[in-house]
Image (cartoon, rainbow, N blue to C red; front, top):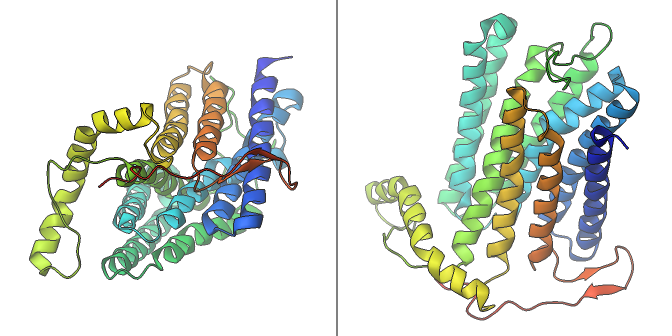
Length: 353
C-alpha cells in the first residue's frame, strides 16, 4: 500500500480508538476536559482521514472543506482548551490569557504583513484582536480573584471561533475545482478560502498549541518534586505593585526552578515515586510539538516527514493520556467491564513542593 495512504489511514484509526477511549472515560467520570480532548482528537482524526481519502481517490471540494475546518482550524484549539479545563483551578489562567492575547496579536499582524491576501479583511483582523484582548483580560482577572470560571471564557473564545468558522465556510464559494494544492508539495493550502476564515487559523492554532504545550509543562512543574531556586508568589492578597512584580518574574522563576528540579524529578521517575502527570504531560507536550516541526519542514518542501509527524503526534498524545491517572484512572476495553489495567494510586511523594 502507498505510504501516502497507509500512514494517514493508520493515524486516523489510532485517533479514532483514542476518541472512543476518551468518550468511555468521560461517560463514567464526567470530567469536562475528557469530553473536550475527545472532540479535539476527533477533529484531528477526521482531518487525517481526509488526507488518506485524498491520497487514495484525489481531493474533492467536500473533503477539502472538512479537512480545513477540522485540521487547520479546530484541532489545536480544542486540545488546548482541554488543558484549560484540566488546570481550571490553578494559576494557569494567566498563561492562557497570554496565549489568547498573542494569538489575537499575531492574527492582526498576519493581516498587516500580507495586504495582498487580507486587504479586504483588515477590519476583521482588528476585530479578532480586540475580542481576543477582551477575553484575555477577563481570563486574567478571573484567575487573579481565584474565580475558577475562567475556562468557560476560554470556551467562549474557542467555541465562538468554531461556530464562526462553520458559518464562514458555508458562505464561501470556492472556484473550481473546489480545492487548492501547493504545486511543489501537493499539500492542500488555504489559497482559495475567504481571508476572514483563513485568519481564524492562526487565532485557533496559536491559542491551542501554546495552551497545550505550556499547560503540559505547567502541570509537570506543579506535580514534580521541586527545588525552588527563585521564590515568587501569585497570592492576590499581597499589595498590587508586589503582585505585578511577582507576575512579571514568575515565568523566569518557573523556568529556572523547572531546570533545577529536573535531576530530582528524574530520580523520582526511575524510583517510581513521581506523580503520573509529570511523564504524561511531557509526552503530551512532545505530541503537540512534533507536528509543528514537520509542518514547518513541509512548507520548505521537505514532505517525507509530514505524515510521520502526525503519526508520532497521536502516539505521543495517546501515551501521555494513558500514563496519566487523571485521564485514565483505569484502562479497560471501551464500553465494557473488561479491565486491562486496574486503578492506580499516586505515590505519596509524587507532588512534592
